Each structure stands twice: as structure tokens, then as C-alpha cells.
Length: 473
Image (cartoon, rainbow, N blue to C red):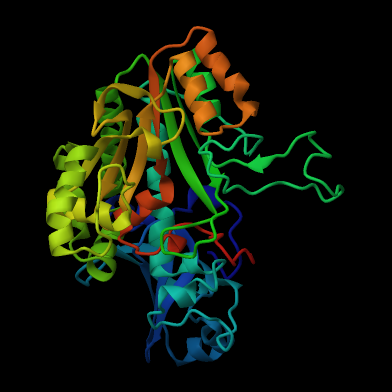
């Protein structure tokens, strides 16, 4: 008998709640469950506890029979059983008489161990629905909310799906540096590192060092020796922006592939995104049900359609023509005046609304990064590059990629034109010594989570958001 103390031999008894729910094999078995109370109801002769351990969205209902003698004997324990309290319970799994749940647990009060109490007067997470802005004040607690748990589990599924997708295709996982002397995009929006025991940027390393904005350049160096690689790690941008789409610290997935062409690049980016979505639809059904009902109605159908249909592909020139003809007439929040401009978020969302998810390609050379491969033909008397952006509903760009310029002289010329740092001479070595056709892309991981969950603020897709004016946890 358990008898109100933590059982030592847990291996023979303990199961997480996801394993138990919707699984008839555990009926009539005695098990131990651990978790936190989401709700509790104290009736005259029965105590109902909904317990969740984070392994899935749904709770396990615990049913405890009580009479006056039990209530008198365990009055202090019963009084402490409130929302947020952590418990360990030993009981029998039985078939549930209620609709909507296959099983529940029947337990005795003397087999309930209170592990962690909650002060109900100060606990900030009540039963009421709190807006995201309120929950954001408590990032250390928000994983206990419905949405916080959903986002965490979907991040986990997408992380595993990403590794599975690339590993199953023979890619090697490479760890690129977080500290670098490079500014990959050349935008200058970097965080510079100053060691606390020095007064100048260059006293420690001998040069100015930044937190990385991308693992791409270092990833390229490994791809031209390993053929296909991918990186998956945090990146940093010092943008003074507090919009719903910006973070100072976020995660990027950046594959780099050799011996491919531009069509291959677009194909694999589309398959990667679809693979992640399918994995969530298969493994997080309860989480998606919650999203579809309470966060973004119709999200499930939208995700299914994205997986079942090939994305439309249009050139930048086609996109500009559509925007100049349709968008300027029907919307015109930010009018498109000429070929050659960079598309903003409103332009991208308009194209997605018209066509559905799509890949736009062959952007003007002047608005893109130095490393992108130049096309031989001209459009509107300007050169274009083999770059592509994947655009999806509600977000706009979620993936940006390109083939890389492999011609040494062309790359040297454009680096000079764009004022790219001379510190990148090592990058030119990749063209001097056995260069091959190669390309890659970057997938913003938090934007992927936004797409799947329908959450409209990127700050709610990452455990501890860092953004302009906020880094207090």
C-alpha cells in the first residue's frame, strides 16, 4: 500500500499521463502518476482532481471517494489541494463512465502525496482565461497555461521533425559559432561583445566580435567538404523593433547543400516545411484541436491543405506586376511604384491571400545579400539573383534562401560594391579551392511555430523572449 509517502520503486508503477490516456491496456492496473492540478472539485462525498504532467494537452481525472471520517482525518491535505499544486498519486486505472475520456484513476486519499503547495493569494494563474500580454509577465510559469504547454510541445515536435527530416536524407548536423567577427547579412544590426574585465571591444579577441546573426557562412565551409549539412541554433539581431514579428534572440534552421540546382533548393525547402507540419498533425492532435477551437479557427484545415498541395511559384517580376495592378487598386496601404523595391510584410501577405502559400524567386540583385548567385539574364535592365522567399498565411516570409555565387571574381566584385568586410577573405577561399554549385536557406523557427499555432505574436512562441526593451528573466 502506498500510504501517503513517495514510493521508491517507481519504475514498475510510474507512467506519464500521455501513455495512460486513450490506452485500454492500463485498465485495472495500479500506477503512479505525478503532475500539477489544473482544476479540482470538492463535492460532498467525492473529490475530483484534473492532473496534468505536461506530456500532453489532456488531463487525467482522479476520482477520490470521501466520507465524513476521511474528510476529518485528511482535512488539512484536502484544503491544500488547489490549482497549481503538485501531487503524486497511486491508484487504479479504470474505464471512465464519462464521455470524452477513455480512462480515469480511482484513488484513496491516503495514497495522495502533496509535493508542492501553492499560495492561492499570490499565484497569478487563475482559472480565468488570461490575455497573452498578462501571461508574458510570467515566462517562468506560462508553460503551465494551456497555450504555453501547447507551444512547448509543438516546438519539441518541430525540433525532432527537423532533425529527422535532414538525418533521414543523409545531412550532417553542424554546430556553428555563436561568437563571430562576421556580419553575415551586412546589415550591421549585431550585438557586440565586451568582456567584463576589459574596456574595449578588441582587448580580449584582438578584433571586434559579435553574436551571430546567421550560421550560414560557417555552414557553407562545412558543406563544401561534407556535401549536405544543416545548423539549428540561436541567432541574434539588434533591431530596435517591438513589433509582433521581431525578437532579439531567435532560432534558425539553416541547411546548406552541394551539387544542387535552384529547383532542388525550392523543392527541399517546401518538403521540410510540410514535414514539420505533418509531424505536428500526427503527434499533437489534442494540441491542434485546442488551437483550432480557441486560438485560430480553421487552422487545422489550413495546415492540412498546405501539406497536400504544392506551393505556387512566381518570379519577383510576376509578383510586382500583380501588386502594381491589384494591390495598389484594392489595398494600397504601401503602394508599389516600381520594379526593384523590396517587398514588405503587407505585400507578402497580399500575395499569399491571392495565391495561397507560395515561393517567390529571382529577386533584384541590388536588394539582396552579396553571396547570392547572379543570373545571366536581365529584367528591367537590372540583374537578378537566384534567391527565393517562401511566403505563408498570416506571416509572409518564413524561409529565405538562395544559390550561392561560386565565381570568385564576381563575388569579389560584389563584396567590394556592397562594402562587405575584408575579414571574410576566408569565405573567398571556399571559391578558390574546389568550389561547387551549392545553396541553402534559413527557416525562422519561431515563425514556423506561429504558422502552426496561429499565435499572432512571436514573443509567445519562445520560452523566454528577448526583444527591444525586455530581457529581465
